[in-house]
Length: 140
Picture 1 (cartoon, rainbow, N blue to C red):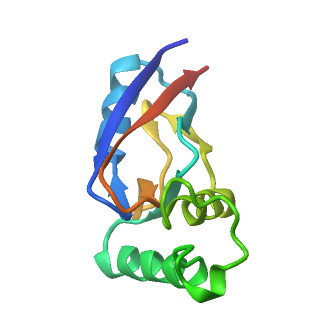
Picture 2 (cartoon, rainbow, N blue to C red; picture 1 turned 135 degrees about the horizontal axis):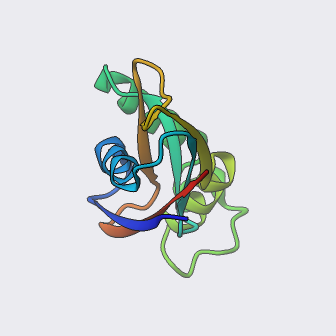
C-alpha cells in the first residue's frame, strides 16, 4: 500500500494546516476508493480535523488549550513531576493525550471525504520550533 512521510515545520504552539499535502498524496496514489490513515510520530503534538475557513477558530482552540493546561511554571501546575524538558513539555504531553495522534479519512472518487470547511492540522503544543513528521498511509 502507498505510504509517505511529510514534514511540518512549526514556529511554536498553534495549528498548522497540511490539507494540501495530504490531498497531493491521495492524488499521487491513484486510489479511487480507500482509507487514508494519518499518524503523527511525536508525543508533544497532535492532529485535528477542524474548520479551516475562519482563523478565529484556530486562535480560540489554541487559547482554550493554553488555559486548560498552562505551563508547569504556573502555580496551578505544581503537581507536575516531569519538568526536565522545560515548563511547556509535560503540558504538551497532556494536550496530546486529550486530542489524537491519528485518524482515518475515507477516500471516494480519488478525494478525501472532508466537509466543506474541514482541514487537517498538526496541533503543536511546544513553545519552540520543531520539525514534525506525519505518516500518510493509503489502504484499499
